[in-house]
Image (cartoon, rainbow, N blue to C red; front, side):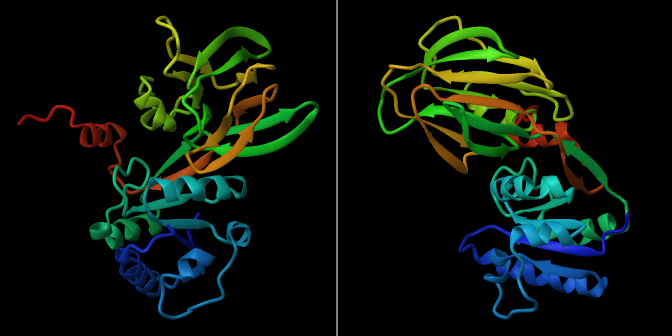
Length: 291
């Protein structure tokens, strides 16, 4: 399907590179006679107002491709808001690591030329859906592309919780928290906590504890159809919260139950020809490089 209505999403930042990159992108898309849609954050980076800005929901309903200028964090935010509308994303990397945003600003026009001509790679990634149940009522619902993290906050004291997989008891833990991660999130917080690297196309989710008070805790990889339930222990003093992708936070209370499962839809990332996940790993982690 040709991409004719292009939504532009930029990170919220004072980075001076955003404005100049955005102006180049607008000129390129206009030369290709594409309709351009701007979200409210993007328009703030321009000295003029080329069109009426759209909120994220309206952009999701109107665009058939979103180009995201920023880093992986900006792409995480965009993915959560666009996945249910089925809008694919291209990332122009102005951040640091760039596992997801893989188009360099220097090669932006050349890469987008091929993508708009239909010469591209489609990369479907799973997300997580997390809900918090307090008593009998759901009090929070969020999506995550990288990870759902249940963790302590505001005090240097561990939290205690039970973990169930598909209503079957797994264990009770005392730790600084628990990371539930996707294949995409295996290169994020889970990696820092000792989790495995996972091929992004696998249908799975994983668990890795954060600083567990035990010598025998290990990361666990689960089938993608599994549902993880984390129950914060009643009567155990705790200050805890749930964080999705390091961006969406919700405070938890003792007795809360957190249900995490794979989201029903996958988000599609569009990469230029030659995209190679393992080449990105080599580049970012310095594998096979000699001094």
